[in-house]
Length: 468
Image 1 (cartoon, rainbow, N blue to C red):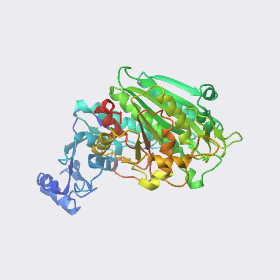
Image 2 (cartoon, rainbow, N blue to C red):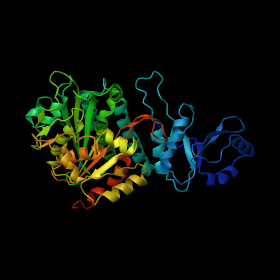
Image 3 (cartoon, rainbow, N blue to C red):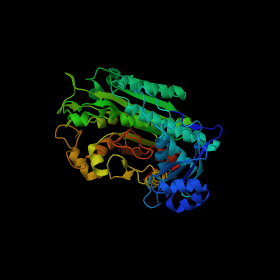
Image 4 (cartoon, helix red, strand yellow):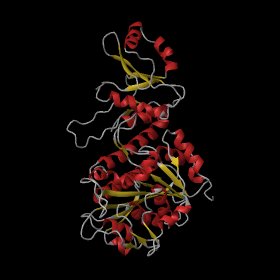
């Protein structure tokens, strides 16, 4: 997806304004253009978009109203609402931002443009031609492009149907990413999982026609702080023997969204050369139903040595993550961050686009929350409420894999916490999907919290205090 250029060709200017800034822009227009804008009731209101013609009928500039500052959670990321509108206009020239609200940054506006210009067109005969924005600040252009392209990578992975994005294809995506940045890749596939002690990943994926696997990427200077990023890669989730309903299964191609997040964040880190010793792990399996599928009531062993009674086969993501988290912790990273499309309870609590965030360390939480807010990529802190560990008690195993109908997102996080060996750890229960389109966030697969976490890492988040 090419939606940026650094070439200084003639470009169609864009004026972005709030209602209080409209008068100044209006006064710089010709009388005919002022009349044209008035006739269409343009006044800088939220979501207003208008192409202004010149005397010869060509488009002279574009107006974009973004509404008042109060309640504007998206900020400059709202620029995606304009790029999606301009898609298909087949402009012969790129666009150039001429005017922005005082509280907007050009960097974030450009990122928003790129996010809104995205379209998943793999299976469409008519390929998407995004509008192109001219970037002039060479210092930030590479970072803007890296963030937008990494987000598009994650979106593409989620949007691709499970028939074309099974365990082997997701493995290949990780292989391609590692090759692009000259990173090392290690994989453990099928029966090797048992031989190398990843029994829960194997159990979840053994019934599928493509073998389960753990794929690991290592990149960066060993002297830099070690960061482990872990992603749930369930390429399709039938629910297993506790089979999902038809409506529940409809978008389960997105159940590898945690792996997509992990690969996208890793892409941002490697593309921009952050001073991080990266260890990305994706636990990949299809939760299928067959004669050898794992069953409710089964007891699984785990890499950590804990035994797990299966209360529900549709709580499979935490099983594959358990083994992967344990593996990541063995290398004693400064921090572990996992992403998973883990619980419906998270969606009931916070909806599809605000992911709950858990941390077993208090000290880094506020700086991370501040970074996600500043980047207009928010998360919401949820508690690792230790008394709820009792919901995971089993009379015949060390624990069970589901805690019942209450506090489902919390008990899932508590389950994962048992596999991190006390290392500093953060968990994000992402949905990975937009049910409907909004500015910069088209319907379908999407990334959440990655821009905010990237900002935090870039600001030195790994150099903070993780002792408490």
